[in-house]
Image (cartoon, rainbow, N blue to C red; front, side, top):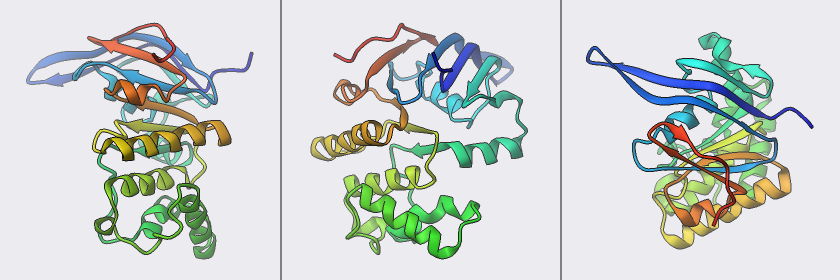
Length: 230
């Protein structure tokens, strides 16, 4: 058996607010295999986005151990963590987080500015990523000139352009109509099946969860056993 790509052991997360300690996650232990497509579900305030941010290295656990791609990310300095995220994590957000003054190609190219690639190499990789999401004819369009579904596909191209180890998606269909949502979910499924990308997706939508291989539910900071979507 190969080592899991993501491994959490007794992970907890709490915040200080107004002199009080608020526990969000408690004693979370589970693994995510390489090539898995996992959906995290739960009601608002259950801690699912917090858990996703921990896995992505955006936040740090208050307790326990979290390893991703063999690295204990809780032990990294802020600078090391930023460099680690740039190399290993592709982010997909509910509201796209595209730069409105940049066109699709420039938005996708942004993560590559942190690399040693030449300008020509960056543009070639950005064009390839946009082609993979079916937007090779929208390279020069700004976000305002694209539909919501097209903007999310640009965001997916931006997430995969660095060839990340792990793709994390926080409600990626939450701002989309049904048809656009199905297109985005189909694209994520294809990325998982054809390129072997590991995907962790937070969603409250049962239809979106059906795109995943496994589903876990969070309730009051505690995680359920994995189950097949359905």
